[in-house]
Length: 202
Image (cartoon, rainbow, N blue to C red; front, side):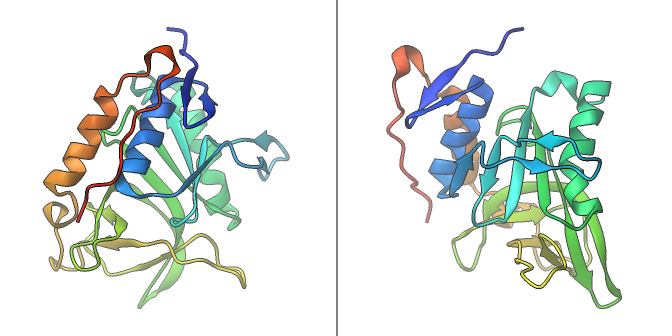
């Protein structure tokens, strides 16, 4: 199926799937850049991820749900994870739209036993105490801190785990977050219209 170029907020996205993610980010109050300056993989290959999420210090790649588990999907994962393996940058990849909630992160982490590469399933949510957009690693119960790299300018990634049961997914993924996912899937882009959506989360 051929992707449909879609205009939103003055950007011409390569697909409606990418545009739906931009809508979701806007509703959630997540700052983003579309197709930021390209980076170079460790083998010298140039690479241009779809988004850079400013407050999460992560590149974000969008792929069709149908390629999950295929050679094309595995290649996409290999590219976005390259920065974590080389300790250069952090990356995330999603398969599908925000309703599908199939997202992986590749970054650096530290805990009381040391630090190293981290990869795992995550979801976007709202921190139950601060009300700010946060990532939640719902499959990990260990307490950790997450960073884009371990260089002198390392940046903290706002992400929490279950922390021995202190938090659970429903603390972060509220009805407002679920509503943002649904609105992003249902938004219409006919005739170049820009959806007038503002964050309504509290």
